[in-house]
Image 1 (cartoon, rainbow, N blue to C red):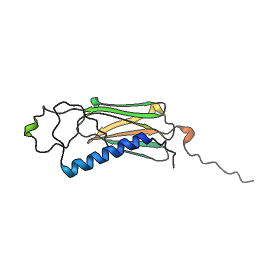
Image 2 (spheres, rainbow, N blue to C red):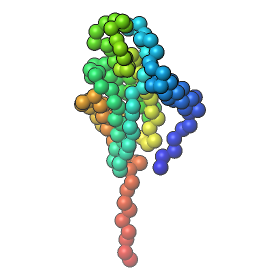
Image 3 (cartoon, rainbow, N blue to C red):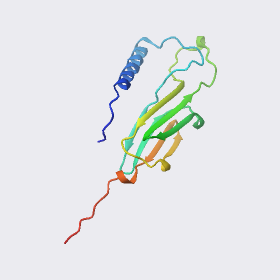
Length: 148
C-alpha cells in the first residue's frame, strides 16, 4: 500500500462540497445562476494500478478533447479543462438544473515514479483514461536463486 500525503485543507473542501450537495438534494437546487457564470466542479476520478502501470479514469461527459489538458510535472499528474454550455441559459425556462459547467483542475501526486515519455491518454464515452507506465526501477523484479 502506498503512503499518501495528508492534505487537511483538501479534506475540508471535500466535506464542504458534500454538505452543499446534501443540502441541495434535500432542499432543492438554489436558484439558477446567471448564464456563463463560472462554477468550480470536480469530476469523479478513479486511480488504480497493476504491476506495470498506474491508471487514472476521469468522468467528464460532454467535453471535447480540445478542452482537456493532461500534464505531468515533478511526479504530479494535472488534469484541467472547461465544460462549456451548448446554448445560452434562460433561467425562467428551467425546472431543474443539475449538470455542471465551468472549469476544473485536479492534481494528484503519484505514488511511484513513471515513464513520462510513455504516458497514454484516451477519451471515450465521456471517460478520460490515462495510463502511466511505472519506471523500471520501481517494478517488482524476481531474483533467481542459485542452487549450489
